Amino acid sequence: MYILGIESSCDDTSVALLDSSDKGHFVLFEKTASQIEIHKKYGGVVPEIAGRMHAEKIVPLIDAALEGQPKPDAIAVTAGPGLITGLLVGVEAARTLSYALDIPLIRTNHIEGHIYSVELQEKKSPIQFPALCLVVSGGHTELILMTGHGKYKFLGATKDDAAGECFDKTAKLLGLPYPGGPQISKLAETGNIKAIKFPRPMMDDENYLFSFAGLKTSALYWLRDNKLDDKITTNDFCASFEQAIVDVLVFKTLKAAAQYKPKTIILAGGVSANKKLRQTLDEAVKNEFPGTKFMIPQMKYAMDNGAMIATAGYYHAIKKDFTSWKKIQADPNWELAR
Ligand code: KG4
Ligand code: ZN
Image 1: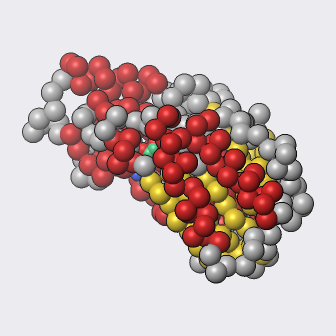
Image 2: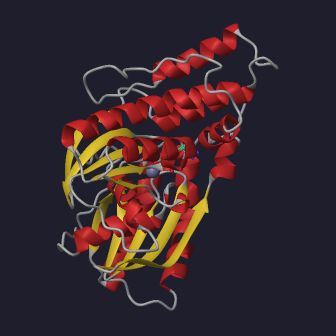
């Protein structure tokens, strides 16, 4: 089945064409137009500019995706959650294409796309259920239990900032460019994780909630009251800070794994590109839940992309779970599992 995936919920306009079946997902075309260089100047994503850039890029990307390829059997488009300025562009483009070419439309959730990004592997790699999913991105930090395709149970989320947001805001305090997550993790590679004692917010609470706003404030206060120098370097700061985030995420995920005994543990979302987080969770799963499969996206599918949206869309398409072009709506606050 040929699925066209369209993603425009934040600062990447991304389109992919997949050949998906029970043999796996084969990417026939994929291209992403990143807006990072533009938003960098402002230290974060400016919704108005993001919408305009998506509008500029989306038709040429769809045109390139369809050229010389078989007609898609379905169009999967991100309808939320995300920035309304971006979502509208993707949804309106998909609606028009669905009408003009008479192709069924799939209203796809961005978080669901991140979860299914783990199936985009060289070898067929289906998610086995139940699957415990830790989705960590610039806008989300959620623990979700997946009991089947399209079946989600909400376990917990952040009460305030998302993990990626905490990385980005703290990077800003250090004067690092947007997006700060990759910058912090690069510097952290050669730093001392024990140099600064940052708090591990809500780690010992009897629930699956997270809170990262306090950690960002601790970083702010530390920088106000101390100096980065030869004794404690920027790299040490980054390593200690990164470790605090990784500790909380891994600890809570393992706790949920002990309770729900999943067959698969999934780490997805932009922050899943963080090497420390990938390695720490991988090792912890191997040690503590040796029979459990650990799935992470390939690096290129950790960040927002159209291929993951097409992959999630495939599972709706086989159930004929379509939405008419007349009815599809973007919803910036669409919650997958609540
Ligand atoms: O999923 P994504 O591409 O967009 C959203 O849906 O939000 O995630 C982007 C987030 C940003 O906050 C970025 O700083 C973070 O992912 N990120 C990282 C790393 N790479 C990307 N955070 C920590 N370490 C990384 N290596
Ligand atoms: Zn995302």
